[in-house]
Length: 412
Image 1 (tube, rainbow, N blue to C red):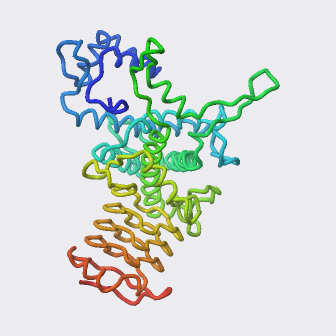
Image 2: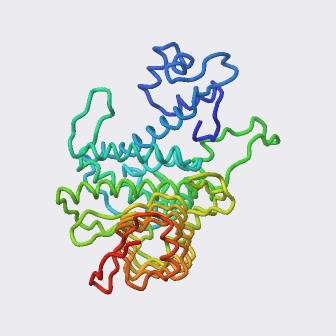
Image 3: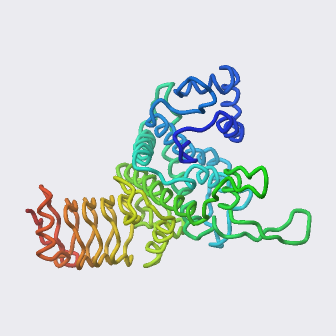
């Protein structure tokens, strides 16, 4: 239901999705409880006339179960950790994962969930809460029998690197690039359609007659935007909570050479959504906004732009040029924003708690109600009018720095 963007689907659609999932355990369970109807009751669907289709008694149940499905899908890569212990960064930026690469199947399973629709604020919140809980369990693996199977910290580090690679796969436009492939058992090559085109064809039934247009096909741009917004936030989340555990226990990471990961010394890796370029992050956000009608944290709005309201906690955007950015209500707490160009940016209500903004250009930025508690700023970062705007939010305190020397704490 979440994938197709509706509150209900027909019994036939539910049956088709069930069998298309190839989940033998779920199919067997459905047969044991009396087929699809029995499974619907077990999954908290409204009962009654089957011709009315399937609908949850409350949409919050659907949102939570969808969030569970996303998190469990993210965790699935860990099962390949023993067979494929090293996830090698793709050598050709434009090329898809090889057929025998576990990230190929994994990228598809995630895209099936994330590309068709925007992740709404309630669903995103559920996913983030579940991810924080799941990763937090890696410190002390103890669980009751009825909870989901936890991953070890080693497995979560493996998943973290996989998420970085899947984001890089999106960032380089691989899902919308046709791929040149070798035809098996033939000494020739052929062009294969972009993956997102294949996904759209799989998820939409073709009309019974070619002259009757019964569906409106979505744009590849739309699926690309949905996928990018979701992957950027979920990759940030996995990196954040794995890094927090790593810092607490003194864990060190090796540099993988990934374009979308950064590191200070041997500290745990940060997520770098800009791929290391000073302008790419802006362009990736533009691809997301090209989908149109980006959902903000509160409502639909034609004027809203990504990454407003986005979860980007702990990311590294050092040296990025992101002038006039729309960062309203964005969560950039504890982010590394040194030397970042934020000239004229909309930072209203943004969470910048603990962020490192030294030598960033905040000229003309709107910081009204922004949270800069414990943030690090150069002494000339904020003008008098910007400081006045911050006073609308109580209990602010941030560090003022000149070069590498801390000058003290500025309080209201």
